[in-house]
Image (cartoon, rainbow, N blue to C red; front, side, top):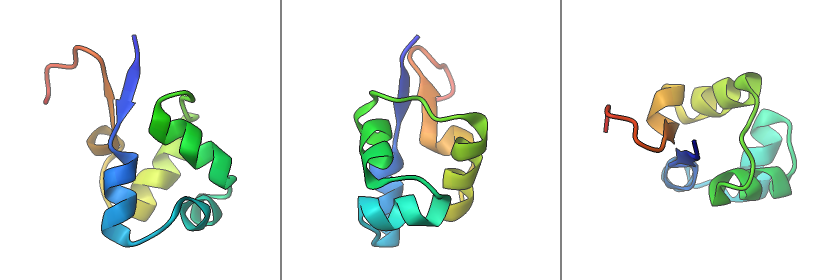
Length: 70
């Protein structure tokens, strides 16, 4: 089941570019890019860090295809 995300939207709301977001959570700009494109599913730890920086829940950022909570 594909994992969809709204990371780019939340990152833009914070006014951060991919490199800055990566520094905030301890990963590279490329990792943030891969997550935003849906080509990489982050670990639980990274997902929690991203949610913390965005001040939202993990579920606000990440959704599985077919998730009924939309």
